Length: 458
Image 1 (cartoon, rainbow, N blue to C red):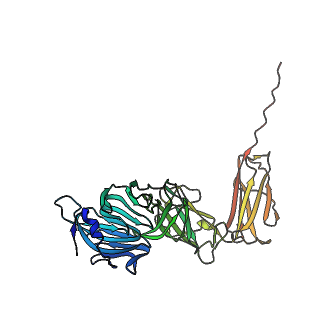
Image 2 (image 1 turned 30 degrees about the horizontal axis):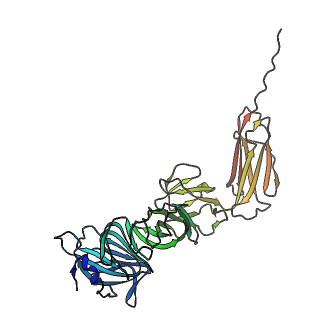
Image 3 (image 1 turned 30 degrees about the vertical axis):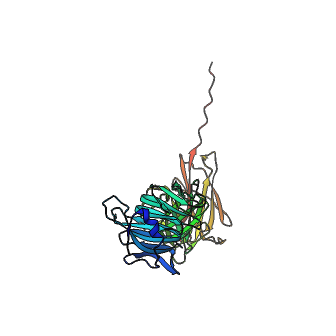
């Protein structure tokens, strides 16, 4: 039976209502799950979300124990306004977040604790937390009324009241502000089957006893909570991230268990890298692959890619291959950011590291040397009889050189050119199939001519 009463007599009615386990007709469970346990319901691992008749929404946190009670009509608005229907929920233990949309003046949510504290969420966003020896009502946005026994008072937006042995008067206090979170790497690569993880830190807040960290997956405009943790530290690791976009929020928690203002969310993107059959990923993350193979990118939509040292970026493709069959450096980034994630692709087989020196060489004063270090891109030993071919030019003209080989290292010297300088010395190394596997070059200047001796004249 519904009753129309004033707040003066509200406490008398609250003492006589009997709870029911299920939600009243017209209220819908729209998210999470609720499990009956005796005379109460318990919210599941993703909480329990309800849409109430009249337009209000209620989210019960994971593990919250609660029961629905008969609705009550209250005179809580201006004289002459119609009565307000309060959907009544008793919170035995846990947390309820309530949203009463603006304009839903004929609806409200009455929240009761097992003790003396009760609250009416009239409009906006409110929170009600019940612990072992305390209860807290918080007005985040809009209007809220809080009662301690028969004493009912409005609660200002941005404030909370906690009834506890330490504060029997439940004096109003500000809701904790937002910490400032920072993600170490906002763009991650998942190479293979092992999921990625992200390091997250935030500023410490005075009066905070813990911090709530929530991670949601963002897909097709829909946000789905995937993990929630609470820690007393100011850093954590967000694990088990598969390719996609994620939103991370952090909120401080005070000693009553009330979460403060959540920080602005931080975005984490995870791009998946799927290597072709036969390709290998070596210890430093380099992907060694066939010259005609391609690496697939998963969930790379909206990312940008640049190659080598170029500052030109374009839309990231679905796959990346070796540029002209040679080593390729692909740099992925989120648009408008400077942080980059690098993919290093190498062709399988022999590679050559070519060093030409010394730097700032001058002819004919200096001797120019070339050293070639052979290595296998997949980290395998280089065979002693590995067949290669070399080419050394000075200003594009072949240079007469004699190579000496010791294991996987080749060395030679380049005779000074008789042509007029300056000169460019180039060295290229090809494998037995004629594929370029390494190159290097050096600009050589001329030695300055000695100054003419001055002759004393009499």
